[in-house]
Image (cartoon, rainbow, N blue to C red; front, side):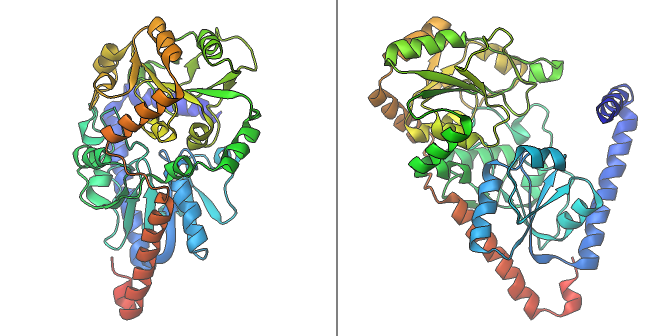
Length: 421
């Protein structure tokens, strides 16, 4: 019933855009008024941190690892996560007991947003949100080594002023990411240079992590894993289409097995913004596993033995593993024309790229472990990468310092002054 109501509302918005614009502006004003009122009445809570991930869709990526590290360092901290659908999030993600889950846009979510000392997310919030002067916004981007334009450099330029106006600090894992944040989001805050928290898992490379993840996936230690993870196409999203899969994945697995003389399975994962992958012709077989709903992408990268992608930033993360990365870029001209412009073409980077299925076969056949490690080293050097494996801890220490700073300031100010915005 609720889905039908949402569809009807969207259709109404398309037909009456001017009315929807008026309603949106009214809602934005009311929301910011509520945030200001909460801050004036209750002040900033120096022990409260609010998290969100991928626009309140999930409990994963950098914010999840920061949350866990913060709890280990400062267990008394009150941690709130915002979700568009709390019940769906609880079903899909293993949310810790110390986390309070709150529905986005509920009165309680506005209270916590208005009074939180620190706000953490990986996907810039709506640009009309206005934070108070004593609030800290930590931006932990989900795209450190991105091909695609974002923020102010995107064609639509939506939802980009939050980072420009309010971000106090950002986690970064490369000099490329610093340039990206300055250009795409006009970021002027502090860079936390230890890396992206989600990549600590890849840098640490702990065998126990791999055993745990393989067990959760039901894949034995003697089986190699190919991860197929393309990005989404804006044109397909607008048209309501699933993402076309240009490769014959069963054939790719056959080539891998013939070349390496080992058993392989393929994990395929659709981008979180896409409507899924068009895999109707894929045979029902234990060789292929849908990992789209698997809760944490970094864990899939941790266990994968090879990656096939296109213009996704996961390629830059997977280079930390020193494993083969193959980019299939047959639609690059169409992609840049109808979906997203690129900061840099994959063809101008050290990545191995294929234009046709035959070229992909040739890439696979001539790839050796030594060549893959060297290629990944070149990719990391290209981006001037500096992942340390301690990014989660550094981000958590930054938050602890801000919380303790607030407590010190509060103890030195009169009560009336503490409650001013």
